Amino acid sequence: MKILVTGGAGYIGSHTCIELLASGHEVVIVDNLSNSSEESMSRVEKISGKKMAFIHADIRDEAALDAAFSQHKVDAVIHFAGLKAVGESTEFPLKYYDNNVSGSCVLMQVMDKHNVNTLVFSSSATVYGDPATVPITEDFPLTTTNPYGQSKLVVEQMCRETVIANDNLSVVLLRYFNPVGAHISGTIGEDPKGIPNNLMPFITQVAVGKREFLSVFGDDYDTVDGTGVRDYIHVVDLAKGHVQAIEKLHGQAGCHTFNLGTGQGYSVLEMVAAFSKACNKEVPYKIIERRAGDIGQCYADPAYAKSVLDWQAEKTLDDMVNDSWRWQSNNPDGYSS
Image 1 (tube, rainbow, N blue to C red):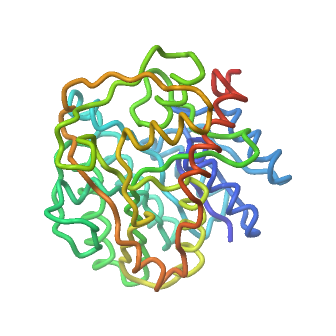
Image 2 (image 1 turned 60 degrees about the horizontal axis):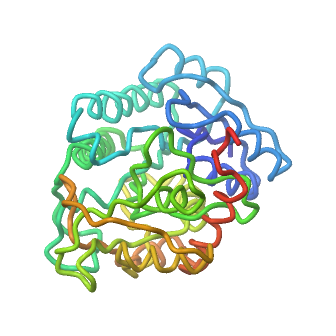
């Protein structure tokens, strides 16, 4: 299939492009490069030995998207493009609704115009809010604690209602947990612009000497050591989940929802300890106040994805931290190294 990947130059997008190419698909990337790099695409092509088409455009630009769909007769879309920082979303909620919701609306309108009827959407476990219990299954109540999560929830609802109105449309909502790690080659990985919003790139930047210490947001949660517990999933496992979703459900009309996680939660301090072992040095940290919009613990029940998509996470915590360190130590300044 020829697959258009929005946000394909980004962290999860670039790893997914590798897996798509390895599975024999053609890839067209649409990315505005606001939080990504053209270099990532060059490295994907080097790893895979295959070329991709690239369109430098924002998904809110209907004319640019229309031209992309006209030029490339795509069969399906994987939609990663979006802003993703919980903390920033509480400061600039309208920015998140404009980019994540309006952009998705424009994308789906252009898909409809060009009769493209398969969409895999990059959703998030944040749509479960602060869950009453764990592990989380797909039928849990949906609620959010921050504008980022709400923007994902609005797009999910938009997808569900559009599927009801279009009998031919297949939408897969992938609610994933906390992606970490990097490609085993150490040549592509997470390269956030500015201060990292996610735990692992912050840890790796402290370990490589770019930052003085890790800020740990709160140590008074009801968890094993008081710090937040999350379901960390290797980005390569996550990427393979997208390939399975598009291959299993292309042309299968309806709205299909899956958790992509490991089913295992680790605390912030457990992640710090594991990474310290991987890089053979202590990662200094300081406990500070809780962050707005954060919750105590969140991890998946991934059984449904295994039963329907024949997918499950295979990589271990050691793989996650070792691959993260290989990427960061080989590329101390990310793609600009």
